[in-house]
Structures are given as structure tokens and as C-alpha cells.
Amino acid sequence: MVEARFMNLRVGDAERDESARLLSEHFGAGRISPAEHEERRAKAMSAVIRSELEVLFEDLPAPHPDMSAAQPPARTDSGEALRETRLSNALILMAGILFIGGVPASFVLGFTSGLWWVFLPVFGGVFVIGGASELAKRRRLQD
Image (cartoon, rainbow, N blue to C red):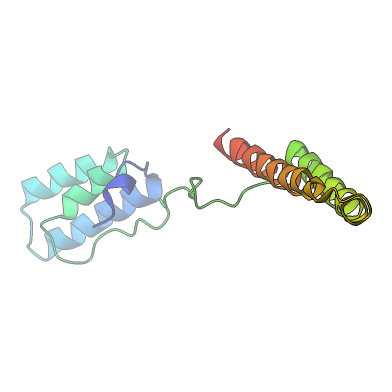
């Protein structure tokens, strides 16, 4: 049996035809009556979603139809990698410029004038801008 969230995937002609062929095999093996075979075959040929075909084989042993052509769509939730955007790239560039320019300036001001606290806004700004870049990537992922 397939996970419940994949049971509503649509099936195509190939899955319907294979199901009808396999039902004929089960009929030939004496597992289902002629009336039941015709009823299940009609349901198989009119099936739209995967669960409509799966239910036809629940009480039958193998073989069952191959549903690999009706695979679930690729996941797009939290498993997807964050994508860079123009905004996130601009924010990373700003953080880099602040770091490259601010750290030497902080050293100079810290040791020459005793203004050691100048390091705090430089590093704080780098972290805030870097975090804003990550938020921009996550926002793009949600859109």
C-alpha cells in the first residue's frame, strides 16, 4: 500500500490498462467471479485517482498494478534549499562591505582613541544584515 497522501494522485491510461490486464489474470486464476471481474474491470477503466485502482486489488494477492508512472510530485516544503535573490545578494554585499571596512576602522579608533565600543555596531550590523539576507531567502521560498 502507498502512503495516504499519495492516494489522490491521478492515474493515466497505462495504469488503467495494466489494472484491467491484471484483473483478467486474477479471473483466469479463479480468484474472482465473472461478474466481479466485469465490475472491477469497469471501475479500473473509469478510475481517475490512484486509490480507485488500489482498492480493486486490496483482497487479491500479487500481481498488483505498477503505479511508478504516477509518482508523487517533488517535495517543495522545508526540504528545499534556500534560493538566493537579488535582495539577499545585495544584503550579503552590504554586510561584506561593512565587515571589510568596519573592522579596520574599529581597530584604528579602538587603539588610537580608546573607542573600543566601535566594534559593537560593526559586528551587530554584520549579523543583522546577514540575518535579513536569510529572511529574504526564506520569504522567496514561501512565495
